[in-house]
Image (cartoon, rainbow, N blue to C red; front, side, top):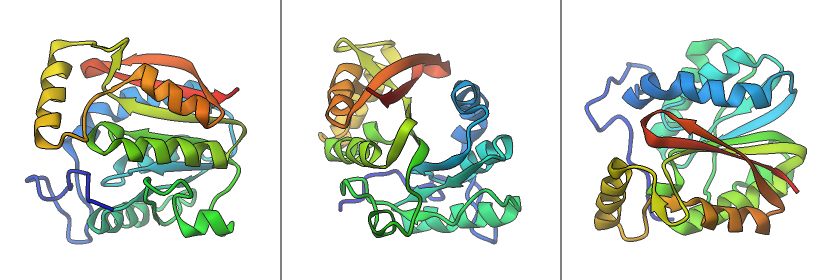
Length: 224
């Protein structure tokens, strides 16, 4: 598939000798994101897949707070996969698995999951800042896979900027959306209504919308 994500490590951020990348956005948003996830994940056990893990910093933070969950980070970019694995090793946490190479344009996501050699019957799926910097086919594949792999009580969490009823929630988001579409017409801030249509097709429904800092939202989906 076409590369669609902005690559960490080529933006002037710090790169450690072991390949760990540092994303400035992590330091801004990891605490509010965890606050949004915590009330839904508290007390759960099982497997969680993070889609588009980027540097791998978020999964380490989340895993530290959820010893009963096994976290499976993933990405498509090889540089990111190296960073994720380096952060996993550096953390010393037993509840983070080595990253999966997941292509979200494929509704099966990756061979390991299709064959049952990867995580199945997922307690949760988490994805931050992906579907607006990717073609719509990525969102389609994301929901198709979530519908396939989430267990009966599983939840899908999407974090990022979204439109409501066709309108931006802030001027800054409108400017951001314009810049995205000028760079790639297949990218752009997605409307919650369009995302809900994909969710319904995958047997999921929107159960919570959480306001986040910097005009972002966390959308929470569960089984019908």
